[in-house]
Image 1: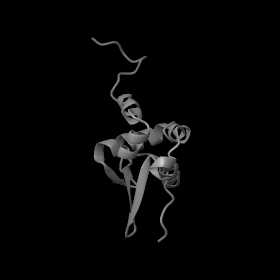
Image 2: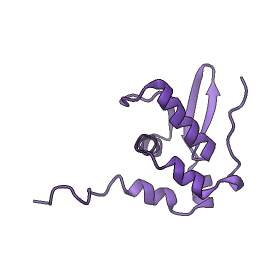
Image 3: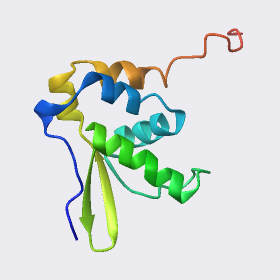
Length: 110
């Protein structure tokens, strides 16, 4: 099977990475990868059609956010955290911190 296109760390582009992170489904995939370190291309609990999910993974991979390796018939996806942190310090931390913050318009604390 042919290798999947993935940019080299020095070729990572901020606008492309931000575009890849600009979708709620891709942000959820990022959150899961940050927590689990590696996942298959069909993680449980997402109500997204498989073809749409494939497209989201492709966008993340081609932007350099993730790396995909093929093991038999399975594609395993990992977050390229070290490369992203080296190229864009604190970007992933800022994005992932948004998942832990309460919503601005959410209910007031009791």
